[in-house]
Image 1 (cartoon, one colour):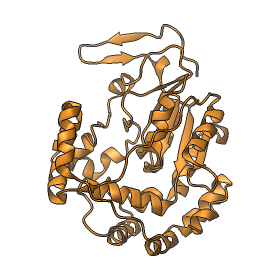
Image 2 (cartoon, rainbow, N blue to C red; image 1 turned 90 degrees about the horizontal axis):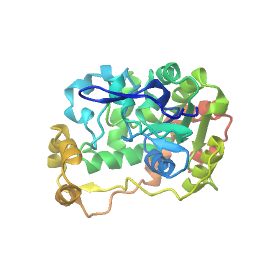
Image 3 (tube, helix red, strand yellow; image 1 turned 30 degrees about the vertical axis):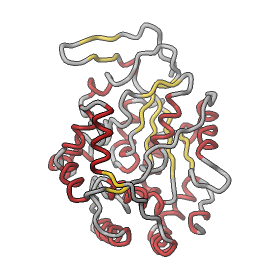
Image 4 (cartoon, helix red, strand yellow; image 1 turned 60 degrees about the vertical axis):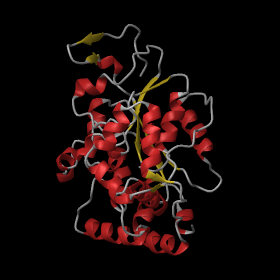
Length: 318
């Protein structure tokens, strides 16, 4: 979609509202912890792409707004300073008005495992292009576990947290945080997008395929979009540990950490990080845990490989 010059912008007393000609037409939908933040930041440096002012607006995952945890946990509305944007006018106001952009893009990893997002994005922007980045589901889960350890949510070992989440998954349940099993069952998630978008408008890449690094993925994506890569992909979202896990959890669940991220100057936020993050090295994923939990995803891996016509056997050999 080429954005017409002079796209209309109207203002209300509370928010700038961008006309429908500024609708996003490029969506990075996940998977969570599969380099989506790095790829989004990379695309922001590419001529012809305008990224959303907020990395994850979570606008189209309307089924997740009905999840019991959404209303009960204050951090959902401000995790890492990222508000969930429900109002359509507020959502459109997040997009810059550059008439020369070929793509107007956003990246919300909830869209891949949301059951509603694929259908809602297609209704909103039927000509959109979709980017799906995949990663070995156990390594993805371990990365999420490290994040949850860092912010004080995960208390048990990786094996204990995975076992608890597997029981939830078998009951047909999942949590909005600690989505270790649910978010890694990719086959049904990818299929929802294939049902509403032509395959040629969906970019799907296993970022950990042998012989492929994240810069190679970025070049493949630029080829898919008809764009020229102009920089390397930044390395973001490093793992860490909570200095005081109970305090971190209280700050997180109270919404205080979200407020700090949104409201305080960078120098002040740096001081807070020193307070609640440890300098100790984060745990590593052991081969025994990798092998054990790979079996839990084996059936889904096989289904996914057939669905996207890609050899994913390297995940079984990790």
